[in-house]
Amino acid sequence: MAAIGFCFGGLCALDLARMGADIKGVVSFHGLLNAPEKNSTKPVLAKVLALHGSDDPMASDKQLKDFCQEMTDLQVDWQLHSYGNTVHAFTNPVANNPDFGTVYNAVADKRSWPGAPCYLTTFWDSCHQHSFAYAANGRCPGRPASVSTTHKTLLR
Image 1: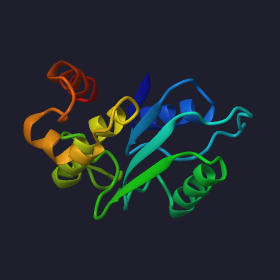
Image 2: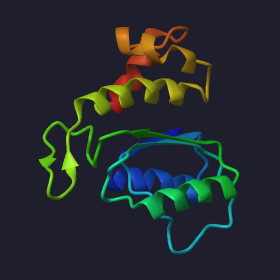
Image 3: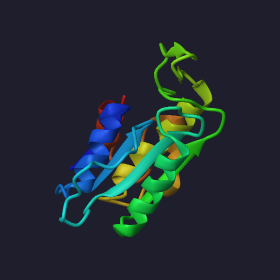
């Protein structure tokens, strides 16, 4: 099982990993990054992928640095993809409030989606090398179409 989330949901997905939930991985799209006030004593079992806008006003430089250090200190298998010239809510086509820091970014949206389903399938099979193929035809090579379609449905 894996968890994905957007914004506060991204924080919730990260917190599932942080509390040692028995899940394979999490993907956080423009999620809030701050750690909970009370840390779990359980080891983090999940692999973590955080997809982040480099200019996201809802995640300060300090929070970003602290998140990276936290993941490293906890010995998490983690990745952070940061999209340049991108603020919060970059996957939401109706986000258009620059004053609040939420603006859709079609380029970042397009770049963030293909890797997520294939990232999730790496917990069960190796597919990460084929993320561009996923983007082209909606499925991961080497995976049955029904499985890839399920992942695409869960993510979109």
